[in-house]
Image (cartoon, rainbow, N blue to C red; front, side, top):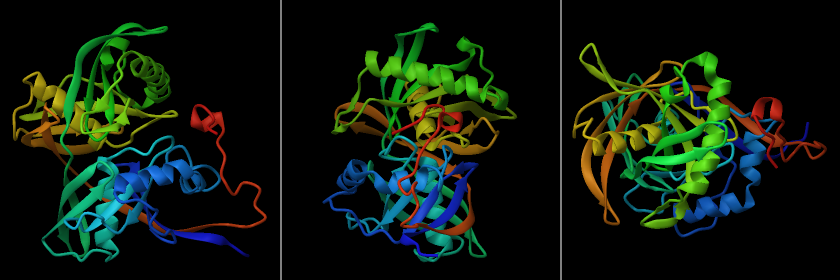
Length: 344
């Protein structure tokens, strides 16, 4: 067997959402910032396709390239690669990256608590890891400032009518939709229908509600649709169920850290969640992130919140992916049977 372009990957998932971590075999891409490095990878795109497309990946796979930090305040950097996007930040992926860095010894672990700073394309995030017996048992990520751009904006969606959409940034731009208005209970058996509706809504929102980050205009357009249920108090806890549609057509298995961050910005703007109040964000598979607003902020003159997302991750295996020079599918492929729609 002769394999070329060997890449070392640690398998991991955060509350059910796969977030593999690339730890070796890839040199840092050019760029004077992690965002610029992300843009270089995006333009080339061969690494993402090789690892996420079949036969080495699948529609459910995300991968994170660990890099040396550029900002001297950071302990490590990472670039997030998803099925169709390179989001500036991801809560579940950050939890996976922190867990892998600590449990493989790439960053020294201190028990009972390790504090480190990660540099994502969207900015610096602080991580506090609760550690015991060599295991990072819980990861708490203080996310990038999150803010609202639209509340209950009317969007015409072909086949679905006029919908009220909230748009907010939580590390990417999200369009938030009340699931009940479309008859969804956010249950496992609705996964395909949620994806179909979400992709249709996303296209309409991107066309009718253009958005851009006030401090980095290169971050623009709604990337994800998030279906939500109203928050409610259950056994004294504020609980909110949601699911996020990730193009080309899958549901986030976790409660989605950046999606929950965007939702916290919306809930705070409506006076439904106070500073420091805990929200238990639950997913379509009933996994949980424990979240709150740790501070208020300003982003280019826009009022913002600083969300804190807490969850767990588990390493699932160690892998080395390569390319046999005779493999006709070295660059990867997709089919619409599992990818919802095939990608180039």
